[in-house]
Length: 256
Image 1 (tube, one colour):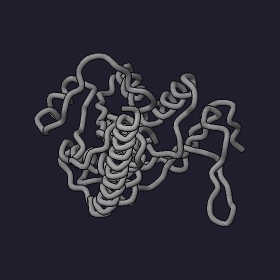
Image 2: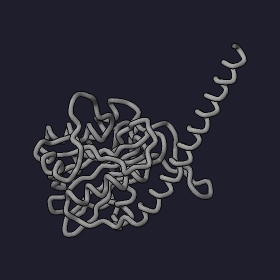
Image 3: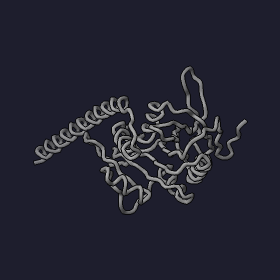
Image 4: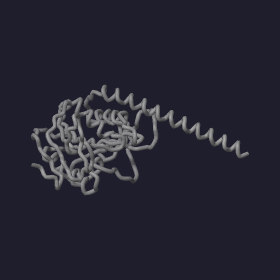
């Protein structure tokens, strides 16, 4: 029986890995990280080896088919990609408190460090508040040596101040204290629409950095649907704008 007064990592099986790379993709802006992680799980046939339960997750459960339910959780998977061992951190939610984020990230680092993780990539969305049909740009933040490597691949390097909120940033910061280098890759997104396009853009950059090949066909099809949604929203905004201007012109004429 698992008690959840604290964050608990339940190990289902312990994989033997050779200097694995940790990739984090939890829900956030545009669900970019979550979509990217779920795509990796699918195309790599990743195997789950741990579940994470925490009292710092939101106070509800997940309801599935037939009215079944389960607690909210995060999960750790492993897979092999072109000879490289990969650990993928995915999940339903992130913690709702600062304390919870620190506790969760430390517990995951405890497990993955023991498995020999030498490098971390976190994935998320960079909210612009704008709808665009162009290919989302990818922005990088993190270890200076890794940034030099990804700059050559067309990734924009974010400069100046400003936080990276949630596990995507905290994992890099706490990992750095343990001597583990890491980089955060953010795909430009409006921030509200579930954005498969941004997830695809980030994964393409990640595959390039790792010098591996990823099957993007399924994500590409979903990205096209995202483009259709964005285009409909853009047209609706333009239509509302024209109607508003028309009303203003009519009111101005009436007043004169």
